[in-house]
Amino acid sequence: MKIAIGHFQFKINSKQELTPDEHIKTEVTLDKIIVEGGHPLKGQVNISGAKNAALPILISSLLTEGQNTFTNVPNLQDIKSTLTLLKHLGARVETHGHTVRIDCSNLGNHEAPYDLVRKMRASILVLGPLVAKLQKARVSLPGGCAIGARPINLHLKGLKHLGAAIELKHGYVEASAPNLRGDEIYLDTPTVTGTENLMMAAVMAQGQTILRNAAREPEIMALADVLNQMGAHISGAGTSVIKIKGVKSLHPVSTRIIPDRIETGTFMVAAAMTQGDIEILNCEPGHLSGLINRLRLTGADVTINGNIIRVKGHDLINSVDIKTMPYPGFPTDMQAQFMTLMSVANGLSLISERIFENRFMHVSELKRMGADIRVCGRSAVVQGVPNLSAAPVMASDLRASASLILAGLVAKGKTEVNRIYHLDRGYEAIEDKFRKLGAAIKRVA
Image (tube, rainbow, N blue to C red):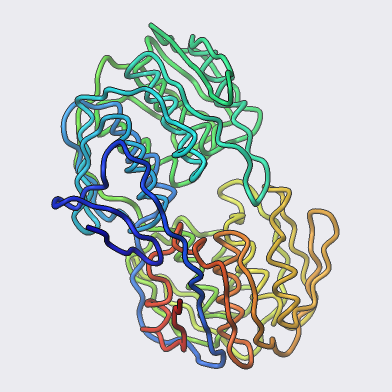
């Protein structure tokens, strides 16, 4: 039978498993979201599990024998794509709501084909675990991305340091390594997926591996925690130097996915923009210090009580400059949302994007709604305006989608956000959550 998830349709069997070994066809419809501005958001919202933590953690099950159980897994298109890929490799996958069970005891395939990898760049994360577990891997190159190039050269360089033979043939990475050996690896830039890939390869390498200039994001720490639960010996995750002592085997675990810090941040900005008052539940405030600091400077009241963040917005929004940086700096995944906030702030602000070279595609759509923004290279100058005006707009990527919905929440009239299939890659039922807070928002075909 078929089941619709957002605007996607999937074939599933009686156990709610994605059909194995077949490329699941997604039927992308012309769904859009309609937002009527002028409704302050009030109430409570629960934060879903973090997509960017769940993806590598689900993939880490490739390293184990037996059934892993993962809870608080968000219901997103990227998760579906990952489970499809794992099943293609031979994993047994069962899904029950937000719980996913994965058993990789009988992997029978070491190839991640183009038709699966092209749907999601994070698919490259199977490269390290496959080489560690099966001593070989053939993974399609992931190609480009709407928000800028994200090359995998650092992944390949690191695997070579660990003793893998790497060849690029016909658009695929072919890697083999009868025996991975620990080594010291310096990453030219602190790549998140590169750090994760090399961590998963090194956990079963002989001896010790040291990753220098490693990424420090909370998702790195979450993956390290899960790998350690599986029996790995990893220290230093969350710092720029990660040490990994190889082990012969790993065992399955039962673990919970951490809250999504970007979804949390999106609702924080929404409260500030709409002069709302929102309690954000089941979040991790410690993962958002950069955003919390900037948001307080805009004049919003931000209070923290355990795993609850309360944000109260006011009539006057102060202009604040931001510069995206690797964690713990201001996250690039919050740049578009914060720019939307600055578009209705009092004064001039400078938004500098230092992570991706092509992440201002939302600017033209915000300008259609009356925003005053000038792009100068990798910076944007934003002159706040008193009001935005509703208009039909088109999303270019995941975070741009969220920024346009935020703009619609404060614009005069009804904003029509097209191409919202991007949203379903990273936000679970976002329109439902906004509606419960008092927004006038709906998804229509």
